[in-house]
Image (cartoon, rainbow, N blue to C red):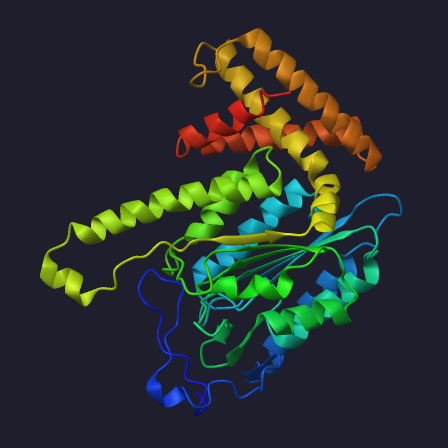
Length: 396
């Protein structure tokens, strides 16, 4: 690692990095620009990565005039499994939610040395190439671009890029803002899962952006152990809240409540430890996830997610209806007639929204079945959440 760019070590369970005193004088060798120190991949791997990236960009279709199309870029910047897992699964949830399966791209720093790559590598060039291609295909006056970034973060607002022994760097809010502007991307939903991610709020507080972060600018976030499937923020936002029919801000508020409960439990566990052990560990503090929502962006997002919201409700209510009909109703959802009416209304909305997006009734039916199947699979592990998502869809 080059002198002046020592990034320290992650605290256990925290998505944070601490900078040693020797690095304080010159911790940013890029002078505030977006970059990374990078060692070349071996020729065979480099060729394979180039093919993966080229194929991924070539498969992105152009936008459709008159339709609010959504392009999704989901990125893992740190080569540990938890971050690639999160980037991959968040991309899947967002693709379903925003009808963006053909317009979704994942970049990843990998899962660790010696583990075969599935996605194009994260590098500043690949990241900017993805934004550049999306910017060329999307209509800035009509479409939505979603960027999700997951990694460790440092107190100075850097979301760190690291592929151990090969890449060291990172991206700050001004870097991301500049790349989006240069790509011609206007309306955007940005989600940043990292400690101190609240540093991204102010630079993106404008009418064309909804920005959601895992933590305040001075707070750590949790759940970054390599063996986990999700960080706390990713789990709450994507694996719980966004699977339902809420709009994105209501989903974020639901995710905040889930995170608060988990962090309270974490603090209780710390408090129950012997004093000598507590003295050796950092006391968990609330991450305080942040958001800022521009009015123009909210309007575009509402159009972009209307189909996905209706499909989510139709799917969850189909699951609730099946349970009620078999005499095993979800808690508070036993009235078959009421569930049938709500499900029928959601199905009608999904068909209407789907038709406007060029989706056939068969396409819509498949999407609803996929959500219902997902609810069935999630229910044993998340019964309260699946029940809550179905109950929320009962409202007109």
